[in-house]
Length: 370
Image (cartoon, rainbow, N blue to C red; front, side, top):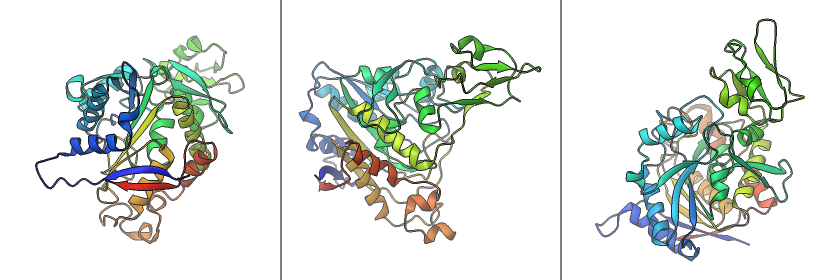
């Protein structure tokens, strides 16, 4: 059956309504007010932006959602999980600092931030994935699973590995703990860049399985036959010498993302919002952002994350290319699939096909414009 996806453009031709008010009206029209939030903890999952990136959603959008939650009697908090890669969000302290620098404070958003998987990215809950083919138990940040209601607030964009970054990516990859992210990106085993290793043995001390070993030069290696993929060694390495391989095939990566997303949303009230604006070719995890590939489109909201992503994709594909963007000239310009044009080796459709297959949602949708 087709799911309803609600849409509003970014036009505000008179003083009667501004963009935050328009988003609130869209959400209430889409059924946000029908969710029982009275006295409930409400997780608002979003991306705070890597320092240096300018394409992430402004804090004003988060405040709109948080205020709407509070108007329904809920207790909102903004949340995300720590990253695998080296950058400004690899532990909770750096992550919070990056969020503050990018404007996300209790004063600008009306609610607090909780990094869902804790200080070092290992505060997680194992969540069964009903119908999962690649993941039987997803490793999800604890604060996400402790919430009574889950809301995703997504900046819709391109992505260098998944093809596009929409609701499924924001939920599935974004809510995975560090070990969960590693499980999605590869077979779940890290490796050591030995040039960076200083032989401090911090990895050996944190490992409960004896996986780190050391050669004659006191350089670490990971015995993958003993490693269980918990990613704790990545968190404690003072030189960032231990890293994830990122070797999973694009289609498998997207299917795992869909399965992780299902683990997050199953069994509780959920609502999903995507803003198709500043559609950068890469993820907001980059410390920079390129020219948007298409003009700004509008706001989308739905109870169905698969239908929401499909509607956003169709809307992007219907836009003209921005000539100065990565898909606006050369060989990329001849490709009719904008996401493939930006990243030819990706397979974005596999996430939606698999999401529909495992019961996460429907690719069929009815677009309702307000």
